[in-house]
Length: 270
Image 1 (spheres, one colour):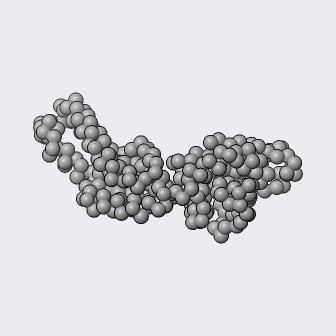
Image 2: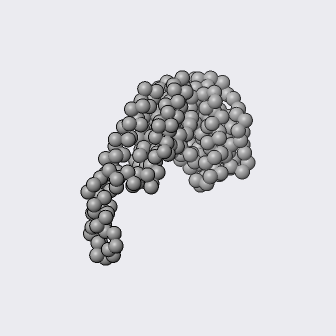
Image 3: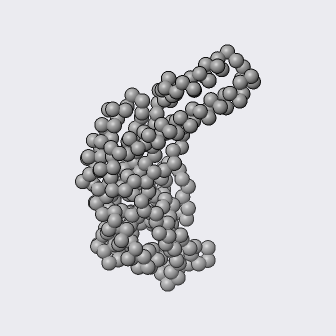
């Protein structure tokens, strides 16, 4: 969903109304404050503006733009982590700044009300968990060489010969190893996912980013199923941990399952 936050000229006077940094959207009938400080040096109060049972979580913003520094990203995330303790949340893209609260109210809560209600219904009682799986480099290469005679024979032929003499053979060896790893990756990805699917509502698979990576997955999980998923991952680690490293994170806002981008329009006179 892409929402345009339009400028509301009737709600501001020459830029004196503070800009608004937007974190997310929740089901919240009454205005409330949160204890985590807002993004930026000032640490403004994080609160909601509300409309018909929905709330946008925001804070005053001292800047129009925020760079992707660790400090800024952490401030954004810490707010959402507090909100998640009580609410299902639709996260808004990091760095979203709106001109006024009225602009957020009109272009987000009013204009997109039905759509937001539908998205929140789908996220109700659910969180995102992330899982990455990596082979230990020395282990997987040893397995491939030991279990693939053609690769082992070609590798042995290269021993003691110069790179110049064996240039094309080395390219061929690399291609054979890569192809074997791709096939093995498919097998092990499915092996891991098959053990986790019973506890997962939806799965998003992202591209693996290194040769060693087997799986790069995000899971949308019912909170009631989270302990079962935790145990399943622990069992995978116990069974595969000597050759595979697992990185398991969460719960986090459902970034991979909700795509809310709020395009802001500058204030008049900027």
